[in-house]
Image (spheres, one colour):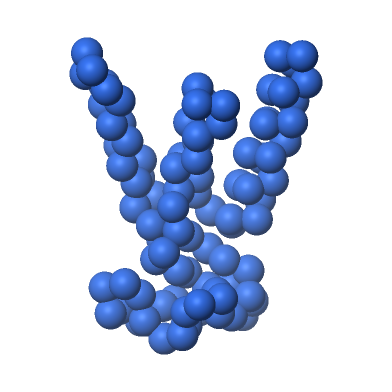
Length: 91
């Protein structure tokens, strides 16, 4: 389950999200693959791992905000394509 929570005041916008994400492969660089930030076991399936270290909030052009869920590689590609098309559209 993924959640992204946001609220706006007169002075600012606040956004918060969980950090668990599905990663292709068995271990992320810089991690042991043994436990999460909360010292809980990762859920590992053949070729997939759940990792609790991902920033799921991405800002594009200081105007658009993405909250990602699911397979990280797919979400990253969607954000990249949106950024390319946004740049093309604004030119």
